[in-house]
Figure (cartoon, helix red, strand yellow):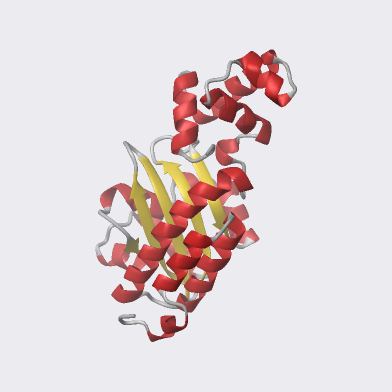
Length: 244
């Protein structure tokens, strides 16, 4: 493996094969964690985000310390996250160091990364997957007291892309680390059946609830995902990998 002797113990190729062979999201995360620990990384997220409508945020993995998770959501940082703000300006994967070097951060973004550095998180890698419009898939890695070189960035990017793909596949069946877009498990159950073309009445029969209750769940899901109608609701749920 070029440029990274420590990864000879568990190479990017090893990790990619192992991740593809995992039967569930828990094992995918375990393989990914084993690989990234070699790069001083133990904090990461994976999911989907709409930069314009940030109600549409789905985490397929969230391996964050509790203190950081609480701060992120309680402070409303999701609305001014410097990493998210840079997504539509970058052509591919990028590190925090590269953002600083290109002066691509706002004053608020620079301040935010300075505060994060106090935790010992000196660098990070962001691997975006451009969907349509303002929708992105995303893997975000935080590096502890270390800076990534170009070879490490390349290896981590390749494994992160496979990690994202497998998490999108497994998590809708295995369960989410946080309610996706704030949806409840029952709302997701109804979404899954509606996307299959079932009426409220038929979906209710499958779930053992009334058709009117299915309708109520669907209406709440529409508001949470900011969908205009049932067709858009099903499309969004599929695009953001909320349902298989």
